[in-house]
Amino acid sequence: MKPATNKQRDHFSIERTYAASIKQVWDLWTTKDGIESWWGPEGFNVTVTSIDLRPGGQLVYLMTATAPEMVAFMKSQSMPLSTECRITYLEVAPPSRLAYSTMTDFIPGVQPYDVTAVVEFQKVANEVKLTITSEVMHDAAWTERARAGHESQLRKLDALISARSKSIDPTK
Image 1: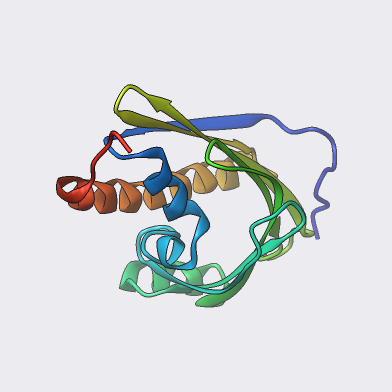
Image 2 (image 1 turned 90 degrees about the vertical axis):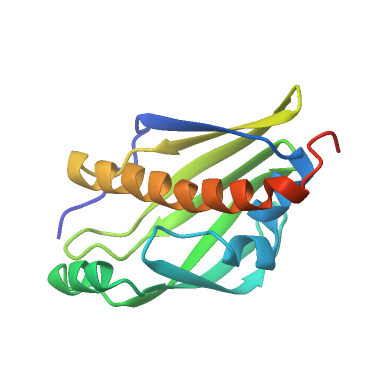
């Protein structure tokens, strides 16, 4: 089994800008209904089982592969189709910043380790700039999978906010 390193790791960042209010984007990241409406990579559904939005609190959810190509990938990697995931909130500063760690304990042959991410929400004119900064994974291939996973789930968020934009007043 490969050991995971505990030394400080590099990071990568992803940015998006939304024509929405900061409260609406914050709520999509911090409520059961919001998270279930978009969280997780494309091809996966998420069911939130509990959320305790405070430093030291946890978001617990079940992520299930539903798309045929995701089911096939999970099986090819000897990974379960459904996984209970836990995020531990490190910082909760409404409506501007969330920091959390995720226990990465699902990779065959790799000792579990935490990955920390910071999500920043910044009001810019009538839009919200969202920046996710995440630690890299234990190797380049898994870091690219993590980046692709963030990009994939953000495409789901992009589509959701775009669909709602006609009814959203971005000045609130």
